[in-house]
Image (cartoon, rainbow, N blue to C red; front, top):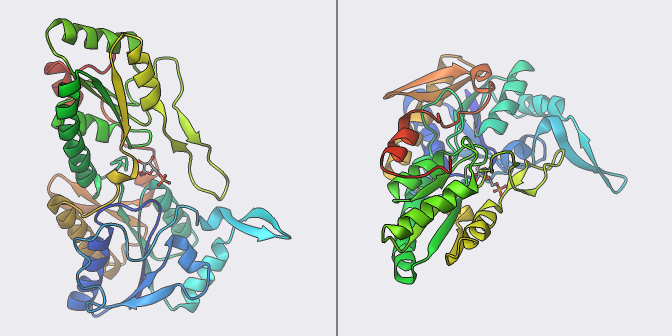
Amino acid sequence: MKVGVLTGGGDCPGLNAVIRAVVKTASVKYNYKIIGIEDGFDGLILPNKSRELTPWNIRGILPIGGTILGTTNRSNPFEYKVMKDGKPEVQDVSREVMNNIQSMELDALIVIGGDGTLKIANELFKLGCPVVGVPKTIDNDILATDVTFGFHTAVQTVTDALDRLHTTAESHHRVMVVEVMGRYVGWIALETGIGGGADVILIPEIPFDIEKVGQKIMDRKKGGNRSNIVVVSEGARPVGGDVTVLHCAEAGGGAERLGGIGNKVGASIGNYGMEVRVTVLGHLQRGGSPCAFDRILSTQFGVAAVDLIARKRFGEMVCLRGKRIESVPFSDVAQGQKTVPTEDGLVKVAESIGISFGR
Ligand code: F6P
């Protein structure tokens, strides 16, 4: 068997750990050949973008962030941007991809990616591609898996940042507003807000009332607290308002980019007479070495992906359910996004210890 592996969408700590587990399992357990495909689906569209991966040439990648294969969120074969007569044009090159998979003599494909990449994998599966998926994202927004690798590393990075911001906030009696990633779901903000001791957490699932946020900060001031930490998810929005968009989506050109809500919230809190500073953590949350949990989960996912191929369970994605690694059809993943439940779980825990969601 000759199996292709690619990483699509944004990078995420743990991608290399999955690649390593795929290569090692293929070699130790099955004697399969693994072909690394570079830069996401670009590697199945453009020439000379693949190479054989062996246990020898992937040595040492377990703790390394990013992806040795490269990635891009601009290579959707169903909406591929090409230049025609000097002008950009969007084309469906999925048939070309299917032909290239054949000419590369790939018997199967492992796609490691977030919801966008997995949707593409599902479309290719419908065209007859023998593909399996591995879910990745720091956002933790993929349905059908309890958690994605990369999430815990991002949570630790943000928690460390909040610890640092506490000491400077306390010294200057300031409000520190911290904008974190997560796209349209609030998992990163919620977990880091609890883990990092925030006073206010604003998430997309609970539109906020800025007056309630201001009131919370004023109450804390009256109670003798001289600093505040406000964690704002990039997808948070006020009641009746919209998300703050930094860059609109383009056909064949990547997804909508969010950002800027932290500064808006900071300006509003400033109106309460508090001194405010805003920190946007940005891509720091995606970089660096995966934490131990993510290395282990990535390894489990990589092994399970090759096992799925051996069992010819194409069109499925590996997932974590409780402590078990299982698999689900791609169609289960395409149903939407895994959002934060607003009336139980960690939201209730946070409210029980006095954290405000601005509601
Ligand atoms: O999906 C992961 C993520 O980091 C989101 O949290 C964030 O909104 C987005 O990707 C940023 O994308 P880009 O790297 O294209 O700016």
